[in-house]
Image (tube, rainbow, N blue to C red; front, side, top):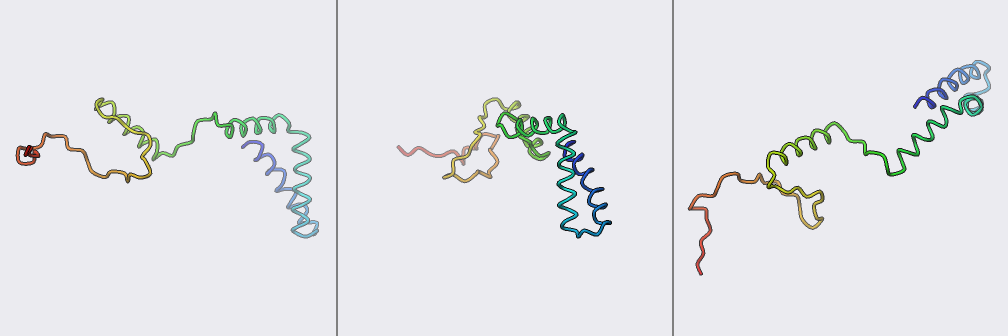
Length: 120
């Protein structure tokens, strides 16, 4: 992030400078980009290496996944329910052939009227 901000801070003033020189907006952008790249490449090696290491870590597969606030909230709620009910098993994946259940499990025992009869 820091390296990108440095390059942007170099690019914008150069773009304004070349715009004042009236070389055309496209050429001003190309010149500003090339000069900003050259300056950042020559003088900001430490920041460039840190940015490269950060990107490598992020995309190597070893980094922790980034979760949204809603996902974190859902995970915390699930953890609380699992801790409160140790007899419940949570499956991490739902088979594709089976739709997710929307029913709320019953917590009380069924009455005698609801108990299935055995006619054997």
